[in-house]
Image (cartoon, rainbow, N blue to C red; front, side, top):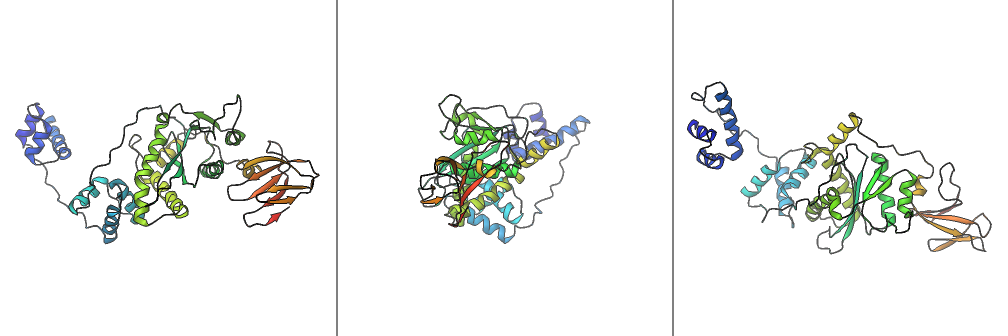
Length: 384
C-alpha cells in the first residue's frame, strides 16, 4: 500500500489504477492518500500504516422506509433517487443521501433503466446580492397527472439571491385571475420584492408606449417593477425550477394516485417548504432557507412587508369600467343588480380570484378609501 501511494505521489501511476489495485473507490483512495501525505509531512511515510475500518454499524432501515422506497421506485414513472430520499426524509425524518438510495435500488433490482440527464444551462447571469431585489416568475404547462394529457400550467416564483421557492402552484389555465391569486399570497408570506423578472407574455407586456397591462398596473401600485428577459434561456434559474418539478411531481402523483388540482397543490406546498429548508443548492452549498436567513442577518434585504392598504383585495382583481344603466343596474356575473347611485354613474366592477364580484364607486388610488357599492359573493348572496 505504501508502495502504490508513493508511486502515485511521484506521478508514476494514475489514481484510477492505484484505486483499482487497492480495491477502493476513488473517494476512499483519496482519503487514504490524504492520511499518507500527513505522514510524509513528518517524514514518517516509511512507518505509515492505514487505520482500521470501523465496518458497517448502521442499523437496518425501518420497515416504513423500505416500503416507501419500494413504492416510489416501482411507480411509473419512478421517482428519482434524490427525490425519493427527500420524500422519505420529509415523511419519516430518516435522512439518506442519493448514493445510498441508488445502491439500495441496485441491490433490490429497482434501479432506473437509465440515468436522468440534466441539460446544461446555456446562459449564466450574475445573481443578485440581496433577497427581494429580483424574483423570477414564469409559467410551465405540463401533463402532471398520470394517464392525463391535459397540460395544466404551474406558476413558479423564486428569489434570485437565495434560490428560495417563494411560490409554486398549479392552475387550470394561465389567466390574469391566476396571477392575481398567486402573487399576493406569495407577497403576504414573504414580503414585497423590488422587481419581477418575466418574459414578454401579453399579461406582462404591452406594445403601447408608456402603457401597462392590468397586472403591470397592480404591481406598480405597490412599487414592484417588471424586468423582461430577452430569451427563455436568460431565465435559466426559474426554467430549471420547471425541470425540478417536472422530474418529481408526475412520478409522485402516480405513486400517490393524485389526479386533482386541490390535493396536488396541498402536496406541492409541503414539498416547496421541505425543499427550501432541507435540500442544499449545488451552487450555494447551503439550503435556500439558510441563504435567505443569512442574507437577512447580514442586512442584505430589500423586502417590504405587506402594506396595511385598504385597496389590497381590489388591486389584485380583474377590474372593468362600467356605467350604471338607465334602470339603475349593472351586470355582475350572469345577473343584473341595482345600485344606490344615479344612472350613468361610472363604476368599477372587480372580479376576485375566489369567485366574488365587487362594485366600487372609484378605482384604486393612493390617499383614498374604497367606497363599495355592492358585493356578490361566491355563496350567491348580494351585499349592498
